[in-house]
Each structure stands twice: as structure tokens, then as C-alpha cells.
Amino acid sequence: MKKAVHFGAGNIGRGFIGLLLNLSGYEVTFIDVDDRIVTGLNKAKGYRVIEVGEGGREYTVSGVKAVNGKDIPNAVQKISKADIVTTAVGPGALRAIAPVIAEGLVRRFKAEDPGYLNIIACENTVKASSLLKDYVYEELDKRNREKADMYAGFPDAVVDRIIPPQETEETLDVKVETFKEWIADRNLFKGEIPEIKGMELTDNLTAFVERKIFTLNTGHAGTAYMAYCKGHRYIHEAIEDKEIYDTVKGALLESGISLIELYNFSAQDHKEYIERILRRFKNPELMDSVVRVGRDPLRKLGPEDRLVKPAERALKYGVFPENLCRCIAAGLFFDAEGDEGARKMQAIIKEKGIEKGLEDITGLEPSEPLGQRIISIYRGLTL
Image (cartoon, rainbow, N blue to C red):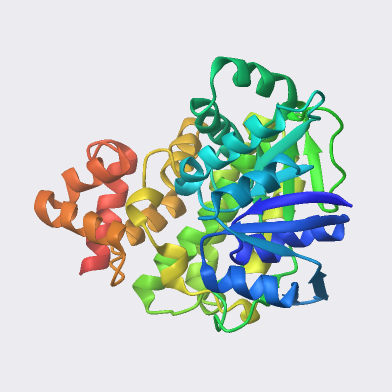
């Protein structure tokens, strides 16, 4: 039986990547540092994935194993014998797992014919596998880097499935939406490309990464920030608010202008993609909280992120992004308790004022058209 090693036994790992690997005939071993989850998986040998929403199905994932990430020798052994390695640990944790992966590769390369191993980082960031490759190569000597060049592939990928925090930590079962998307760069695999149910291949991954970030993530953040200002608790409630729906849909159409121009997406296909995103937000069974989706506004309102970058691009292509400006202005009010990014952002605005604060947070000049409009909306919301 083919063997898969997956780093991260959280909701995305169990409810998305682990599920698809299992459905594709892999024996899945999760590596995680959460003692409760590791113990639970080894005891139960499986869990359920419950799709919620129209056409939802229930899957039983069986025959799984788990290794504690602190058990380095065991983790290294699993990697050295794996047919594929995947991750869903969060972009910030990729550096932490790189030494273990590197050690697993070194052990693997001791064989006369180590075989090919593809390592796919399924993270919510651009070129996550390439980033992980850089971290792994930092841990390898020259000889093993040369071996890795021959035998180890790090295909970049984009993944999309909404999996909110689960109702209880007492179960390993995971509730997920029915929609799922996993697209990988076919040109970065080594050896035969593994057949994984639900994983698509493309020659132009950047187009799909940006489509996801500047549609799903843009819409999610815009909905959350508008909703927070109006007192809504959940995304599905907020998107039923006509003002929020119209603003978010308008923002996605504005964001789509550059995507269509840059990557030759069909205008009609992209319009349907936007409608599908908005329908996903309406799923009441996800119970996705506004605070969760809006968290870390200091990053999400950054110059290269999901709201500011498409706004600047829309302006470049001749459309003033009024709706994106409204979402950005609303985001500047986000001050959820316990959110360190929100705390830092509010401290910047309080200390420097909205003009300089906007520039520091978003990179937008307060005297330029976008900056002027966002400040005007912000001040209107404070009245």
C-alpha cells in the first residue's frame, strides 16, 4: 500500500488533505505535536469527515496512524519510507518542520535507488512548497542537496476549502463545506505524478493562486470587516445583509478586472466563480465567525494582500474600486479582543492618526485617490 506522511493533523489536515489521500489509496500517517490528537488517532485508527450543505456526504477515513512531532526518530523513519509528503501546518510553521524532512531525505538518500519523493505544502500562502524547499535545503549539505535536486520534488499548490473551528475538541470528526479545490503545478513534480482524487494539475499555478486569494480571501475579509462594523457574528448572517452582499459582490467584480486581464480568465466563468464563492459564504451550517475570518487585520490590510493589492490593480485598469475602499475602511475598525494584529493596528491609528496610520498599514498615500476615499469613508463611519 502506498504511504503518505502528512504534517498537521488539524481540521485542514484531517478534513481535506488527509481525506483525499485516504480516498486515493494511501495509508496516511499524520505528524503533529498535539498529544490529544495523536493519541486519539492511534486509538481510533480513523475519523469521519462530514460535509455540510447541499449535496453533502459523509466519509469514514480509516487505517490512519499518527506520530508525535517531538518523536524525531519515528518521524524521520516515516518520511524516509513515504511515497508522498504533504503539509497543512500554517506558513509560519514550515521552517520548524524542515529539519525533520531534511533528516528523512538524508536517510532516504542512503539507499542505492531512493526513488522520487514529492513534498507538497498545502498552505494558505503563495509558493509554500518552494518556501519549504528553501528551508529544507538550508539543512542539507552539498551532496544531499544534489541528491534532492535529482529525487525530491516540491510542487507548489493552491488549496481551498472552508473548515471553521469545530464545535468540540472531544471528537476527531470534522465538519467541512462541500466545495474543495486542490491545484498543483505539474511542472514541479519529480518522477511520476501521483494520482490523488480531487487534485488538479496546471501549467499556470500563479493564475489560480491569485484567483483564490483575490476572490475567496478578498470576499471573506471584506464580509468580515463590514459585518464587524454592523454587529453581525457569523459570515452566513452577514452575507444576507443586502448592504454587505452588494458591497462584497462589487468588491469581487472590481478585483476580478485585473485577474481577467492578467490571466485570460473568461469574464463569464469568473462571474460564475464569484457567484459560487458568495453561495459558499451563505452556508449556515459552517457557523463561521466574523472574528475568526477577520483576524489579523494588520496583515490582511497589507499592501500585497487581499484588499489593497486588487484595489490598486483595479485603478490601474481604469476602474475606481469604490467597494474595495469600503471594505478597507471597515477593516480599519477591526479591534477584536485577543487579536494581536488588531491591537497593533489600532495602536498605530491611535498614535499616528488615520492619515499616517493608513499609509503605515496599507502602503497607500493619504493624498492619492485611493487613500483619500478610504479616509473619507472611515471618517463617515465614525460619525
